Image (cartoon, rainbow over all chains, first blue to last red; front, side, top):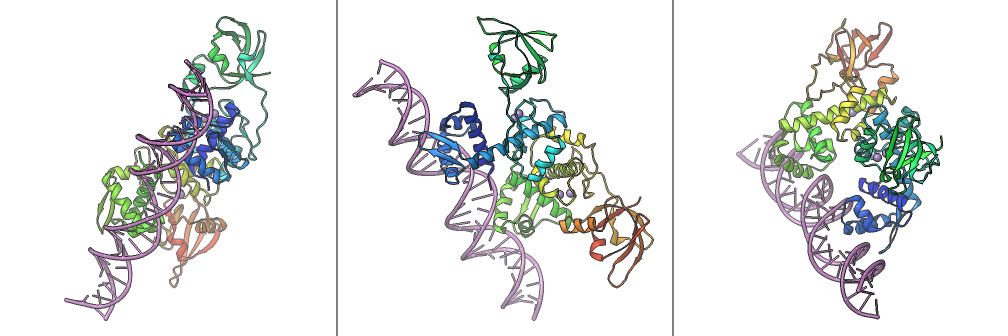
Length: 219
Length: 219
DNA sequence: ATAGATAATTAGGCTTACCTAATTAAATTT
DNA sequence: AAATTTAATTAGGTAAGCCTAATTATCTAT
Ligand SMILES: [Mn+2]
Ligand SMILES: [Mn+2]
Ligand SMILES: [Mn+2]
Ligand SMILES: [Mn+2]
């Protein structure tokens, strides 16, 4: 029904819209999918005919409700597979994305249903990203970037806003993981670096770049 | 490196050769892959150039060692996934083939290694088919079709020679499963039907069609 | 050995998903 | 408001995998 390429386009549009909040441009898509802008224009016209997106010439694209449901389902599958890879196959959180990119396209509703059950209906993936339910519904999150917090704030690390291997590996190396309790001890005005304690023990200095990408929530 | 289509062609060639012991004809492949004979001729020429098979015009094809290794690896993956689906996700043995057909093409050596470990290095899949090791080596089997056995024979059901859903469902309905002990009580000359006992208890009458497809081995 | 049947190949096309180069439209600078 | 830069589209192709119809090769029966 939906081709591999279509699934990847819809997912990319979903993610870009999520990030920017705006209509998604040809160039943003071209960049994200590593495909030429000309090919994007072509493809986008085709899936607009199938009512998966709306396309405004020279403006950009938006998902229709139908397209959005497909995108969310792919994301659901991706995140469930990531949970499986980490919890059952002992992969590290920086090793699962590529494999999940392939597994997310396997087609079988019963498979995903059983996988979800096997995993105990997880609410979030190994990076803290929420897993939508079978109806495409997300639980609502109250997480915020640590950089928005002030001195004295105490919260739990529940996700990351950046998924690059280098960032994930940096966190692992720094002994920081989801679930850790973070308290803001001081903030350096000059470079916006944070002095924090992890689980009421270790003191750590985190750069602006890092605190921007750490998502925390009330305990 | 190897496309989805190539993988499926190589696997089909492997299986047809395994079944017939001969060079694999264009029409057999066309039949097995549900693709026109013309397309087979085309494709077969291409993968012969890549040294995955040898192709003799108007005769048929054979796997090279390289092609054989790829085919066996796909089969290994297929069977490991089937084991996973049955043992971890609680699918029935007649529900797993289609899903495994998709999963077998996921590319990641570490994934398969970890999956194998997660499953406890199974020797056979849910249908009793042997799972080759990472080097492509099969354990050797001493199974034979029940139809080759004589009255008085006692053995264990360790596999099936036919994988259709209808056959698998027939066995399930008849309460016959891998591991069951089968003893041949009598053989009717006229229609070659077998009277057997299952696990030294239930008496059962099995038609020739059925005993041809049951694989047994010494206990 | 030849006719007829069956199997395989060739020729010519199609669709999907991509590409580059050229052109046009939109946004920025000056 | 022009000029320039950047973004998007159009035009024209390509490669992978498939197809049908026509032709040729091989096998089987008489
Ligand atoms: Mn991911
Ligand atoms: Mn993730
Ligand atoms: Mn199977
Ligand atoms: Mn099997």
